[in-house]
Image 1 (cartoon, rainbow, N blue to C red):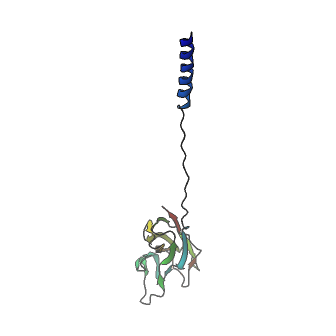
Image 2 (tube, helix red, strand yellow):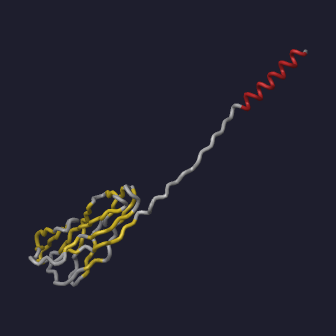
Length: 168
């Protein structure tokens, strides 16, 4: 009987010991690195310069580098006027890359003749930029579209268009 009591006591102790070691715990910490918010500010507006229209549909392509070419009913006079691609200063955390979103539809330039638009926006860098020392210049060009009617001389201006940048 004494052996049976010792055996039962031993089984109870072993049973409790097994249950006590069936569970384990560990701890962890949480960390967050806050980065400088990405920013964009306009440095220069886009300007296609002086353009002549023959009354036929035509285009003027302004590259992000600020060069122009004309097609069909558009010509470029010898006096170019002010020609500039739009320029933006992008700032943020050093060595980060970012995506660039340009206008996807045409914007209207308002003047005395209807139908003058800018479309097909392009940029340098294209699609993705990289911040060096936390900054980069983003240049934007587009295509000026002239209607197939005579365009009255004057200054044509669009509403503001939006260029968006986001960290990758």
